[in-house]
Length: 190
Image (cartoon, rainbow, N blue to C red; front, side):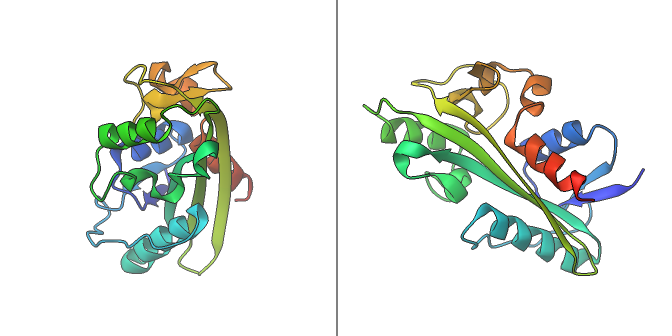
């Protein structure tokens, strides 16, 4: 089985990527592959941040690397938290703190349309860049429901599934998620 180094230390992301690719690749985290440095995500888009991560890990290890940058974009907040989703309530923020900040920001807001967005980039040692993009639409609930998934999942009501990601099985979520759609888009190009 061909190995695929993923430029992430996020256990939730790694688990989803493994499940979505379902045995097609041996998924290895950047840490397992020997990368221990910090990556400054200073891009202005999901694509730029994914490229920064993939290139940094590929250059350091001398191997092809895949990276994902994703986040929640809320229409009423002008697309926030967007590329700052993981650190919405500060550097090193917990999912609970981010979710609470989001609920506070939407206090009294009736139009709660939102989407999860994801860019994935495969950076090859040859310098070739292959990318994919995916979105999944829904809305933000008034309180957390369920404990499935990770991050904002308990607050995200999926239009596709007609229920919160927090109440979905991994299989349900992975069939409609932004990450699934981005990886599908990427692998069509390979």
